[in-house]
Amino acid sequence: MNRFRNLVLPIVIVLGLIFHSHCSALRVCVPYLIFTILLLNFVATDIKKLRFTLFDALLMAVQVSLSLGIYLILRLAGVDEIVSEGVLVGVLCPVAASVVVISCMLGANRETVTAYTIFDNLMVALLAPVVFSFVGEHQDVPFLQSFWLIIKRVAPVIALPFFAAWLMQAFLPKVNAFLVQYRGLSFYLWACALFITLGQTIDFIFRKGEENIASIMTLGVVSVLFCVVQFGLGKLIGHRFGDTIAGGQLLGQKNSALGIWMANTYLNPLSAVFPALYSVWQNLFNSWQLWRHDKRK
Image (cartoon, rainbow, N blue to C red; front, side, top):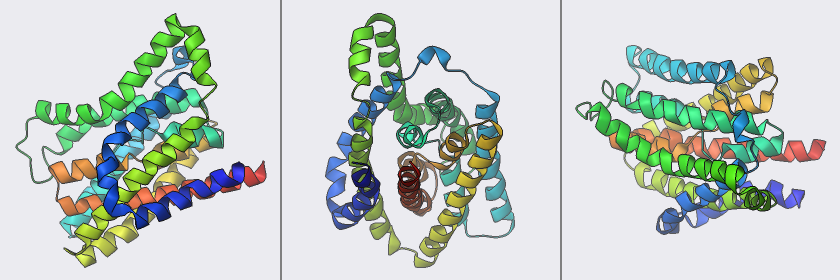
């Protein structure tokens, strides 16, 4: 079973490449898959132990300062606007809602990962409208409207399963215990969601690639670089707090679907290639991490 699990991500990427043109029709399934994935993981989490910690604050500070700082440096250096905006949105976008799946399989603390997933998505929902008021092509969009647009994208798939799990732990412990037995299914549900989102991502790159080949190639190189940087910085921070795996995954594994949406909504649409390609690199890295983890065990 572990050998099959190690092959899931490469298989998903290949299938996404082959069937990318058909994945858009399946995108309506993704929120339901993510909801189920998070519910199965939240019921296995002691929600009473969730706290906002210095670890969370430091990871968020690095995320925000890296995204804004690099964007300003690139613009001052005269780097192409598309590339600069791609880095901004790709680094600023929050941690993936499904990060708990891979993180816990690799040995991260479940409560740490769950807490950060909630806090980081809320932070980006509050900060992104402010940032996009000064950057991008729709700077006239009011803050409250921008906030509502973003919160609508992240709240249903994070808040609803969280409160459902909290209610079951408080009032339906037998139902909660029953669902905990099936938390292992979350990995395979995540693989299904990944197939759809990666297929959409690959299809997006094919369609946008004809517009500006030079920018696409530059964004591809830069997205690899920042994938390495963010996983590396996260692991360094996590090591300081005794959870190297959590640090790397929380800073490095991004909600690329939200990043693509923000780029298309607020920035030059071609900048969405950065989070699109980033999603490929992060999942290749996750596949390698799973293989190495299972080999060591």
